[in-house]
Image (cartoon, rainbow, N blue to C red):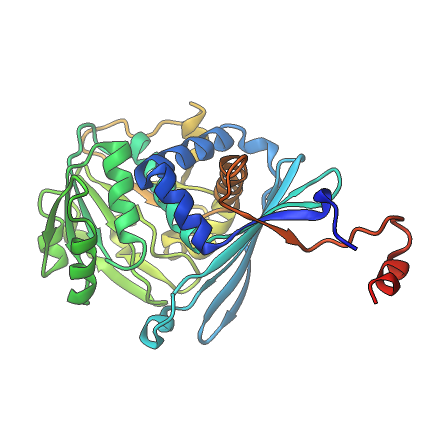
Length: 346
């Protein structure tokens, strides 16, 4: 028995995701995903929200990130295993699913390792549009792993930066990032210290992988007027910034209930004031309001951003060949006769 069309779920493999990205263009796709995220953040209150569900081990963390707007339901499975790089494996892998709330049927299954890098960059640059200093031209990219090129291109496309200053404890990672950014319209400067990397930078992005309380930026490294895009700290026991930087900054977050457990602000008192980005995007709260203000986006990633990315992909693959129909739903002629369907398959 062949499955009917309604039982076939569009599946976007890694190969098809890469084909789609090349078809649209990296910077264009990041910008379009950012527009979807912004649209969904502006209707933040219509979503079911919960902190992601983690399973921690000595080796890393595996997480589920679910949300729904009442019409569609989405979730992402994602891991974070910093030790993987030493074994030739990705630190982060992911896949995601979108479903119709009315029927419960899945409407999309897709890889999200590549897509998470795109949506993380899109979120960072989207927030940068609201918080970064006007006419910012230079970004320090501290941590030159798998996310770094996406971050640099996102801030180029959406915030107008023309120079990136790269630093990583692994000089091979910096060389990799610099090579990948050749001929991408950016001036790329490889730096040997984090202090050197932040020279002249109006935007500082930190994206390191080690699961530990780290001090990537010390207090004396951060001058007035900069925007810090802190995206590496994303689970309990993992931070990148000295606590005193937080005390000098205006802090912006996605979902406080999750960020207080996983973000940089886990180092602060539970009632330390923060501003939610959806409120800035809807005009209910202020973003940057002072040229000397230090703004800090304490980003840990939130399920609504993945929901936005899933919706974007679902629309983007329509009338294309960038997916495969996947037979993953039983579809008996009589919905009550699942056993009969099994027997007729002999």
